[in-house]
Image (cartoon, rainbow, N blue to C red; front, side, top):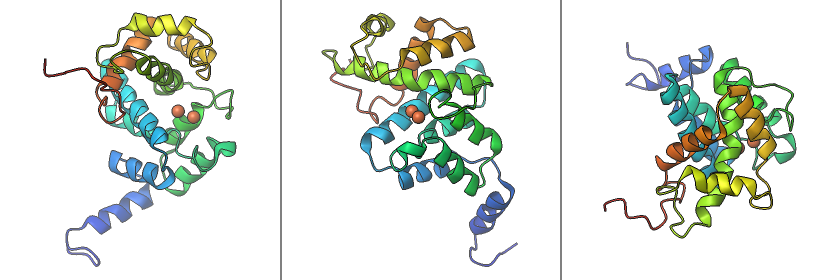
Length: 214
Ligand SMILES: [Fe+2]
Ligand SMILES: [Fe+2]
């Protein structure tokens, strides 16, 4: 069927998607992220969390696309509306007709800080935990001689975990609480975060001087 406005039917399928709230894909999530965020740091953080969510979904046999998309937009409002963090994202995603499950997951990452939505699903608990952990892995990578996540070991991050003054902005209580909810050891979670971040090391500026061809 040939439809007005687009001979390939793209316009029509987009319209149907908007009207019915069909699962948002990565392209849509990325364009929203770029619309609301100009800060390189925030975009790299979003890409890091997305990659870790994808890694964890794969490891747990879950829907990688869903986990990745939610990771990508979890801090959507932070650059422009830091005082309304989570609440503003809820507003934006609702107006974009995103599914309630996605919106709930995004909002729950701020549980106890800027939202009262407690992480309940496996996806929500993982997001809540790895969000802060990506910050600790990033900070640890930057003080290493290689400045890389590619040759990083779990024990390097664990060492930095114990130094409370190191990357003091990383909320260790949140990570601990999340690990408890998931029933997973901190070391395993750190390993997952490293593995996920390795997959986008170049995009997030953590390839450092490690020669991957060697
Ligand atoms: Fe956040
Ligand atoms: Fe975040």
